[in-house]
Length: 144
Image (cartoon, rainbow, N blue to C red; front, side, top):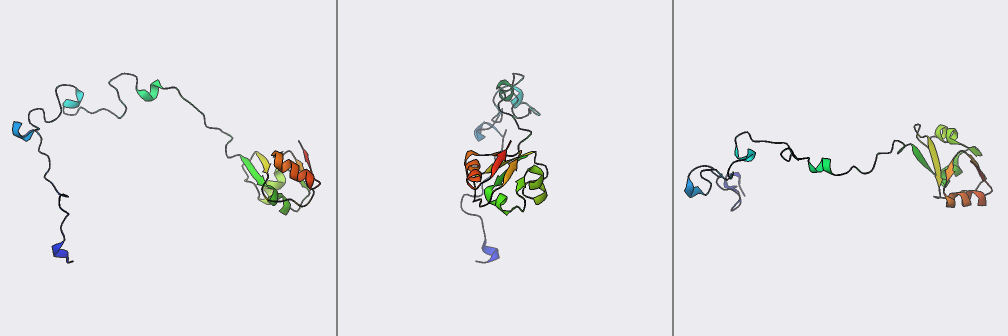
C-alpha cells in the first residue's frame, strides 16, 4: 500500500443531498419539510422536550426517590480492621484516629468480614447480627 493509492471504500462517499432543486430531485418545493408549522419555517427551532406549549412529559410525570444527605457519611468497618486496632474500647473517635474510617463519617457500622480473635468493647457503634455474634463469641461486648 502506498499513500498515493489510498482511497475510500466503495459506497463510503456519496453526493450531498441538494434540497429545493426542483420536482425531479424528490426534495423540491417544500424541501422535505412538509406543509406549514414551526418546523417548516426558517429559524423554526425549539429546545429538546418542547411540546408546543403543552406541559412536557418530564414535568407531567411524578418525581420519585430522593438523594440521601447522609449517604457516604456512614462508614463500614470490618471485623479484621477491629482486630488490628491497639485499643480494647472502640468508639467512632478511636476509629477516626486510627484512620479506619473517614473524618467526615458521622456513624459507623461493623460488618461480618474477616475474623476477630480478641475481646473488644464497642461503644456507640452499630453492628450487623453476624458481626455482633462474632464479637460476643470472642468475649467482647457492644454498648449502645
